[in-house]
Amino acid sequence: MSRFTPVIWPKVVLFGDSITQFSFQTGGWGADIANKLQRKCDVVNRGLSGYNSRWAKILLPRLIDSQNSAENRNIAAVTVFFGANDCALEDKNPQQHVPLQEYSDNLKEISRLLTSAGVSADRVIFITPPPLHEPAWEKECILKGYPLNRHNSVAGQYAQACVQAAAQCGTDVLDLWTLMQKDGQDYTVYLSDGLHLSEKGNQFVADHLWVLLESRVAHLPFILPYWGDVDSKSPESSLLCDQ
Image (cartoon, rainbow, N blue to C red; front, side, top):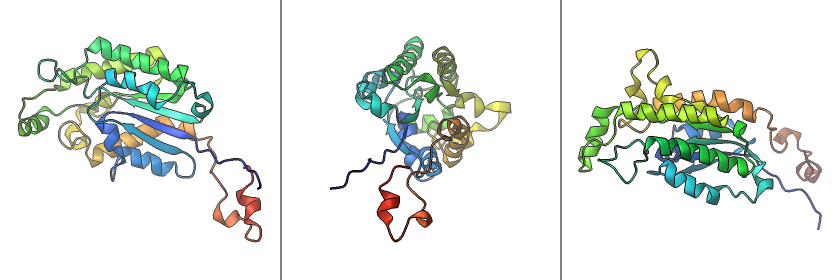
């Protein structure tokens, strides 16, 4: 039997809460990134609806094995997108709430865990929670039988903590909370229910994230030959050789 080298796709890992989990829906920001990276990179969705940074920190070693350094070298980038649940008000939603200082510490620990697994800080992008539209989110809360459990001003505090943690860890950061409200623009168009992203919000995230992500994946080659370059008389010579 002839021997050949397996084809290995680099990875971009999206790690976060529901805003990440839902990003592979039609028009989602994760789907947009995956489309841009066809035949160059696998985009892996590790979004976990309802999760906070406390749970993420505990779970991360099960998602990215620190002992598998060879595989982790193929990780081109990791996005870390938590905070929308951490910033829930403690008295209204104690299960998801994480105190501000602990949230900051958790992000730093996530960065440390990634580094120890062989994913250096320059391959990590923190993403802050987006702004919150309280009237719309309150309607969602009431429908589920509980009072408004988040405030935009509090989400802003967590966004600021995320930006500061990124600076201390040496990672890039996408500050959605600030960008979506820049120059007094109507940020509500970016939200579907006051908390999660609308179609415009998903496109906003995709466009701004790509600015940060592109430099990390620009060097990645097109995987396997273009069909027109395959030798039709001897396809094995094209398809089983190292690029």
